[in-house]
Each structure stands twice: as C-alpha cells, then as structure tokens.
Image (cartoon, rainbow, N blue to C red):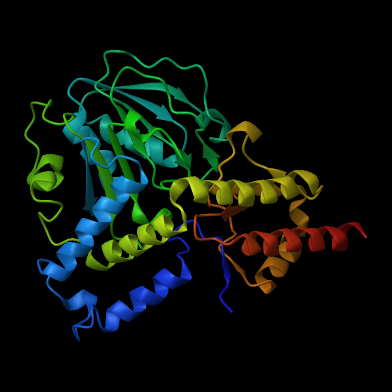
Amino acid sequence: MKKHNFSAGPCILPEEVLKKASEAIINFNNDDLSLIEISHRSKPFVSVIEKARSLALELLGLENKGYTALFLQGGASLEFLMVAYNLLNKKAAYLNTGTWSDKAIKEAKAFGEMVEVASSKDKGYSYIPKGYIIPDDADYFHFTSNNTVAGSQIKEIPDTKVPLVCDMSSDIFSRQLDFEKFDLIYAGAQKNMGPAGATLVIIKDGILGKVERHIPSMLNYQVHIDKDSMFNTPSVFAIYVSMLTLQWLKDLGGISFIEKVNLKKAAFLYDEIDRNPLFKGIVAKEDRSTMNATFALVDESHKEMFDTMWKEANINGLNGHRSVGGYRASMYNALPLYSVQALVDVMQQFENKITK
C-alpha cells in the first residue's frame, strides 16, 4: 500500500499520472522509444510542451488574454534572479513573508533599489503583514503567495498600481484567483504540478523590454518566448509529467473544483489541531496555508511516541522544516482526503493514549 505522502516537495502526484509516466519511460507513444531518449525537437515532444503550455494558461483563465507560458529550468531560485534581471530598472518593492521571499529580496538587491514594504520575519514568519504601502514608482511588486516553510498564505491579491509579480511555487493551480491581475507568475513544478526539474513562468505581454542592462540569453525571458520555450534542451520528463498532471486537473473540473477539495482537507486537519489539546498551530489562524499546515506538540516530551505512531500508520513526510520544527502536513492537489483522515486518526489515538 502506498504511503500517505505529506511531503512538502517533491510533491505527491496522482496515481494515474505516475502510471502513464512510467509507461512512457519504457515506450512513449507506442514508438518503441523511451520518452527520455527521443529528441526534444521531435514532433511527439513538441506536441507535449505545446499542450503543457496551453493547459497552464487554460486552467488559469489566461488563454487568449495576452500571456505566454514557459517551461524553464533552475527552479524558483533562478527566477529570483531572472525577475530582477528582466524587470528591475530602478526600484522594486518586495513583501517578505518567508524563507523564499527573503532569498528573492537578496537577489533583487544586486540590480537596483529594493524596498521591503513589510516583513513577518520578526515572529518567524508566522503571520502575513497587513496595511503596508506599495510605492507607486516601483518597477514591480513581488510577493510569495504561499510560504511552504512556515505554513502561511496570502488570501487576497494585494491592490497595487504597479506590475504584480508572484512566486506561486507551492499553491499554483490550487485555488481560484483573478490571475489577470498578475504580470508575471512563476512556480517550481515540484510543489504542486510535477517532478523537480521544470519551472512554469507565466508572462504578460508588454511587461518586458523596459530595462537598459544587457541580459544574458539564458536569463532573458524574451529569448525564451521567441524560441517557444525551446531555447535550450528542456526538462523533457518533468514537462511531460506536468502536462499529465495539468490534464488530470482539467478532467477533474479544473481549479474551481480542486479548490473545494483543498479547503475541505485543510479544514479537516486544522479543526483537529485546534480541538486536540496536545497540539497547537504555528501560524496565525487567518493566515494559515491551505497547502502546508504547520503545527507542534504542546509538550515536546511526547515527540518520540507521536513520531512512532504516525510512521507506523504509513504516513510520510510529516516532519517540519528544520528552521521551524514541529510538523508540516503538505496537502497538495493530489493528496486524497483519506490521507488527511489517516493523520487525524493518529492524532486522536495519540490523545487517547496520553490523556487516559
């Protein structure tokens, strides 16, 4: 029996996607060749990347709306650099809500003035700052929609007159937003879309070409757009699995459908965290992530017992990030409700052992 996989990334993937992907490794398209040994310029793979790019825009409601979808490499960490390289002319504004936004800020500082409009670093990123001011003269405003490490999530899109850039690595395709408000979205595939190795970037027409610096070809978004995301050899397998996952999501009913499922899973677990006297949530309730629930034991002396119990229940990936501690249950799109039920059952069994 497959384990209940709460890993923060690489993420859990739909079983049918894993099956199709494994078959393609042996024989892709019944051509008696493996997916990972065919030419990336061949018609079979070109059709894969074109479909993946099209599905990404369709699911976000951005098809025929003046946006381009790219599949690049380097993860969100390279995007921290690429965003600033391509967009930061004089000044950029950033919201600091976690480990990854903090790293994005460090990259931006090398290209111009960086305004940190607000930060929740003072309390270990356990909340989302409110009431901050975004300067109207900024080249763009950058924020991270979901903070995988601390377990917080921005619930409403910030209101701003400047171009909006967002790192959606760990909650893309999980909830419905007005995606037309964004000028650039990026997301590492390995958090909610596919295996490690590919990064989805959504770029609005007209946002580029406003910086005066020379941009190296590999870091230039326009070069990748002009080459239809094929400037260099793409991550063939990661893109193929991402395409399968996006098709799976579309067949389920798209983002509006999966959002309801995700809200149900999150509510189920958070209700238990709040009810059970042996556990406590780490993030402010109004800012809790639907994707990554972080919590801790009230009494750490019981840690060995609880750890033994959830591992014996066939649960995987529950340990919290080393910088936060405690536990982190990542409930990405493909995680079934019965896996959350399995975790809640263990938490209740643990309570019965301790309190009786």
